[in-house]
Amino acid sequence: IHWFEWKGDLRASTRMSCETDQAKEALRLAKKLGLEDAIVEEIRSGYTPIFEYVAPNNQIVIEYARPRLVYLHSRDRKTGIYFSNPAYIDRAQKYDFRFSDIQSQLDKKEFEGYVVLLANGLWVKCKTLWYMERHRAVDALMRPAHRLYEIVFDGVMDDLIATAPDRHKDKLRAIYIEAQLDLLKERERISALSESIMQIVSAGDPLPALLRKNYVMHAQTHNRPDFGLLMTAFDDRDTTKGIQTKLLEGYKVKYPNRLFADIDPEG
Image (tube, rainbow, N blue to C red; front, top):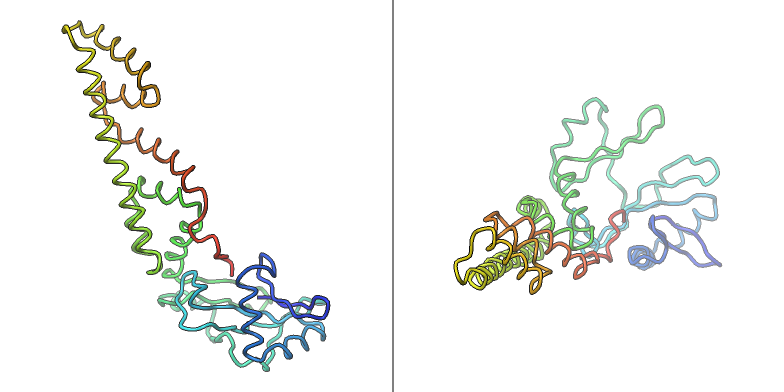
């Protein structure tokens, strides 16, 4: 969360804008915590204080028990230099160890990682493996919802459910069940339809070449949307991939939006 004054009023901003839910909630929290005067004083002195807004209703990966504005640092708007203002009590925790030892510090859970300030002034982010695995799950959740059905058909939904935040697991299980039931119903429908056509065109016991010709003509005339799948069934081949492709096309229309469109993954 960054801060600025607009026509005499304090504003908070995420990477996206000052109109996001996170920015508005952070501003309300700053006022509630009595931070407004200190932030305004810094802004007028040429600095921008930067905070991390965390809350139970703003969970991306890590679960938080209560809303907090965690102070990170302040930036000189002219020089770009960062400094730490001791006026803010709720601050990001600092760690002191050699950068060469950082791999031994990345085995934590419910822990995102470190922002490392090197001696040459460079900043480096190091994330824990636990966080990276769960953030990949969150990235999947942030895509349009129809992509989650693709994950089911790719056979990796179990992995996604295992690493996703607990509050998303029930919805992911529901998507898994819906996709698998849709697949089963379509396979049964295509199989039954193919058998029905075979019964119609096989009357009189025609020669194999004529049987195929009659089947093609009937399927094209009466069942054109399913023609490709019906020919796959006629050739005694697995219809699963074709049905999955057709279902995914329908999911794109039915579920074009993100499930959690109100969440900004960058905070």
